[in-house]
Image (cartoon, rainbow, N blue to C red; front, side, top):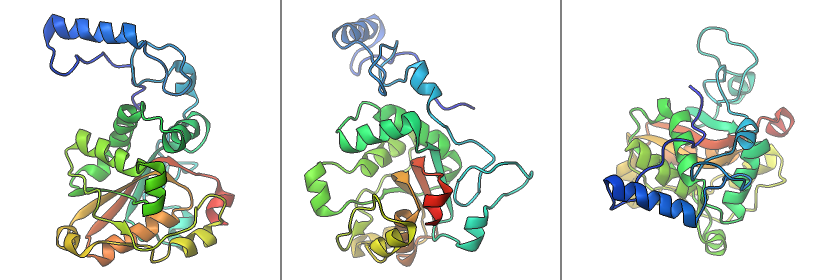
Length: 264
């Protein structure tokens, strides 16, 4: 099944039903005409992509590594694990992402993360819930990758927490936005090699004592916006498993599939 482009029938405005609801939707569309969340060109629905941006999203589909979620060149017919996952098994159990971190997805993530552009939230939520269907089935908690306190104050929001809330809303799996925290400040990961990233986040996360009983024995889905080398989500998974989590999967909007960067 192809991911949802967002071009689904308009929903009535909350609190309005029947003809009044449809009138409210048309009035809202007149006041704020629908625009593509990627390039702002006109579209027929809010929270949607135009056809050009839609074609520029490199959605990740099978065949893929069952552990890291990276695309693989061919299907062997059974469970497939990449050479990287075999050589360096991550702390998490499985990872899945909506698309490669390139093209329109890279622009969408950048706008969401750095430009305070949240109009794509409903679309991101639907994409994540679809990409993570197998992970969310039987999951007990959805936990976002936490931000450092200073960075959160400066940015004013944690994009991973926003995504986790959308996934929780659509899937029904409870969100636990404070079940994981940073125990120390870390440098920005942008521009670091994989080895440097691993060193940067090693031991940086912990589960607060009051959350440990609620983590023990649970199946957790860890949510982030982008997985680059996997260092951050790996460190988070280690912290969750130290606290007793039985299973930790990773769900992200975008995955960097550049082999050179992933192995650097």
